Image 1 (cartoon, rainbow, N blue to C red):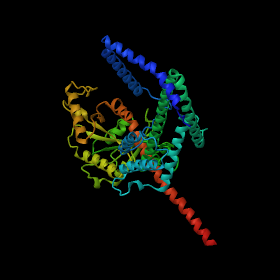
Image 2 (cartoon, rainbow, N blue to C red; image 1 turned 135 degrees about the vertical axis):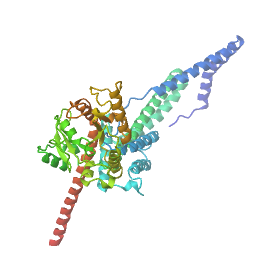
Image 3 (cartoon, rainbow, N blue to C red; image 1 turned 30 degrees about the vertical axis):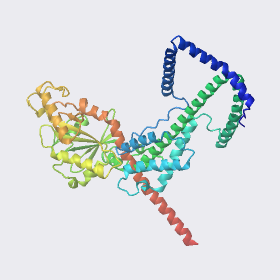
Image 4 (cartoon, rainbow, N blue to C red; image 1 turned 60 degrees about the horizontal axis):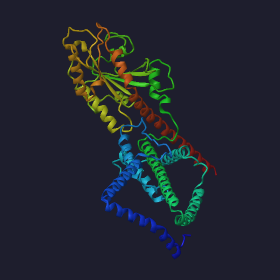
Length: 510
């Protein structure tokens, strides 16, 4: 109970304060008589301002070390359409980070969860009237389980003693703390009347401790709120982008059916790990088959072992750094529109990770190449939004025919050209990059003429492919994920059909 002050207690307090008030008054009068009063007030004001500034600076610089920051990063295997969704989640987490009542107010927590799901759903289903509903029910249950499991691990790993203290214990501790605080307040009042210096120091210490505890509590709450928003947003992106799977699978650890068929057709034993897949594109007589010969380390004539193919022909390529890859040779094209692309070629677009387009550097007719790449880009934008566009590299062939034609003294430095041939090669590569809307560093000039030594395959093309492996592995992951999800989709239909048939048979026999 709070202490009731009597008149006698007030009288004793005034008697105690009077000497100090008199001392302050006499000191001020002395300073005024000697002309130091205004200087003293100025010095005191400057000291207080400096003290206030230092305290504010220190409060901004000092961070409570309660738990380690809960760092949640986007999945590197997400499709490009997921990046705007993650940016929106990051902004949402900043807006809600100051709220400390989320885990005590059910309505606010439900409102936040709904806002997170709507924010993500609109990024993937903008045309839907109810974008938040665009998912099968089992996947929502899987999302809830994953979020709860991750938050559980964050609490167990980062908050000491969280596994041993029950919620009831916390409520009881709060009641005991309130009771002790009331008793302590009464004791402090009596203590202040008889030992004011010690009481003042104790008050300052308790105030600072209280502010420290509030800082610790606020930081803990903010980090938990941020963790909840980002975890829920992370798995919501997994859900609406089609990356959430009901089974725990590693997509690239299982060989796809079409990769197994390609390896069998190529006469190689199929392994269990999905290989990288490269598609060779180009106009008729652009040098696709010659490039494949060069990739396999042996140059043959244009009418040699690997002629232009009427359909897709697979080859298994094994090189240092690539482990194992499938190279797909495609028929030549010229002026094909999107709806005129041969079906066999179009079916390969979603099954490859790297596209190697072969262009003749000595010819300016690249409209067919631009149409082919634009058709591929539209295909992924319209029909494969949850996959990634394959890495597109261009092999500029027949650079030996560029002016001056008779000069052929490799190597050539096209990054800083000085010789006439180097300028011609760079100009040809820049023209190809502009016509095909590609970066200049994705254009590799090569020479594979039978009368010349092979140039810039080992020195330029292979290193560029290896340099793009990280992006190609992301494309491969999404490609395999879609394939495994398709298998799982029909597998669940089969299991449900069998169970439904057994149930009907059971009721029919009764």
